[in-house]
Each structure stands twice: as structure tokens, then as C-alpha cells.
Picture 1: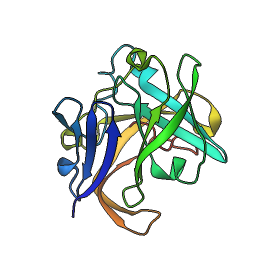
Picture 2: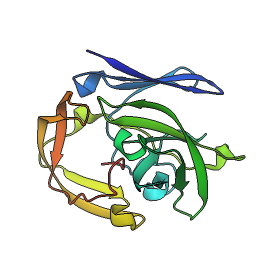
Picture 3: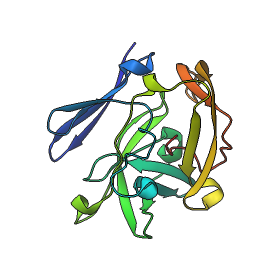
Picture 4: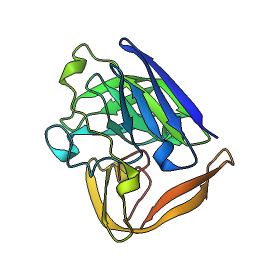
Length: 193
């Protein structure tokens, strides 16, 4: 079953389709381009420095991480980071703080997209989404996030297994989950691996 998360922007509609198989997950939009994606392309293909597209997300009761995936400020995060928040604030790596609007969410896949409210969206750093079908057991796994509110922390481990199942907060069983032994703590949620 494929679920879709639709996001409208000033260039049209973006559609994130999530299937049971990560190879079916794709982002469609942005002048007609399609990017198959679940993971970031090692984060090292980010435009500029690797970590500049990773943001801190602050909400009324907690927060997490996210990654800017378009130059006009769309940020991918976990739904549980922003689902019960009235106000979302995004803190960029350079310290700029911006309000963000939640523009799409899917509790069953625990994905959400927020858009920063800025007068200069073209100046935002963004990362290219990668293809999770290329991930192999034993590869190095690097997670960048904001554990316990400490901005831009990096942790590493290995990909321990592929094809795991995990139940989402809504109760839906998510298949084809990557397992890693990288140390992930509260605040890493929504960040890239």
C-alpha cells in the first residue's frame, strides 16, 4: 500500500509517496524532478558543507532534528517531532532562527514536512536525498542531529541490518527499516542517517 504526503508550495505540489519497500519511496515535484529517497546520499553530497542542511527543530514541548531538502526551505523530519506543536521554530546551523509551518504529515510512516518562513529562501543550504537501496549491512552509518538539545552532534556506527519491521506510533507496521548501532538519543528524531 502506498501512502502519499502532499505538500503545496509556490512552484506547484510536492508529493512524497511511501511504499512498503523503500525503493518505492520517492519525492516528486520541484520542476518535475523525481528523486527516489529514504536516506540522504551519505549527507556528504549536501550543497556546501555536509552538516549545514541539518537543522534543529524546537516545539513547545520538546524538539528534534530535520534536514532541508530543497533550496526554498522544505524540511523533512519525523511526524512525532512536530505533530502536537502549535509553533515550530527551526534553528539553522549558523544560528538563524526562523518560524516554520507544518505543510504535510503522515503519522503511519512518521514523516512530516515543514517549510521555513523566510524572505530569502534561495539562501538556504539543502541536501540531496539518496537511495536506500544502495545501503548494505556493515557500511558506516553517520547520524547528525540535536540530541538533548545539543545542536549539530554527530554519531557513527554501522548498518546492523536491513529489512527490519517497526511499529509506528499510530500502530502501523513499517517494513524495510534500516537498523544501526549508532547512538541515537532524544533530539536525534527527524535527523538524517
